[in-house]
Image 1: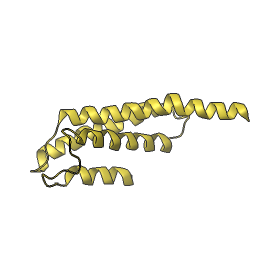
Image 2: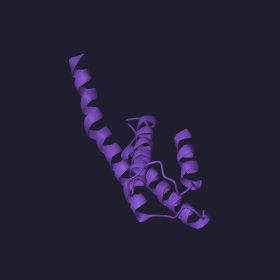
Image 3: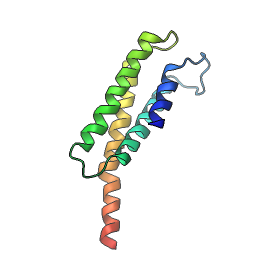
Length: 115
């Protein structure tokens, strides 16, 4: 929940035109990272045996990201909703799920087999 509050605040406050990074569309890396971390935290917080675990950790951050983009477009003057931000968010969600599903589980199962 703390991460979601953090992302919400950073998504809705206005920043000056001065950017921290120097290349065009660098904010997409930030979007990817925020949603990668959010999805990873959700994956950790939901019990492994839950029936719809992956559906939950994909749908919740995805729709949260769309809501944030709509709020930016509707309620802020300096921020605008962006379809490419939604794509970057979705990429972060996808990679977090794939990393968890294929790599972390394989590492865990190989540790169990060794013991």
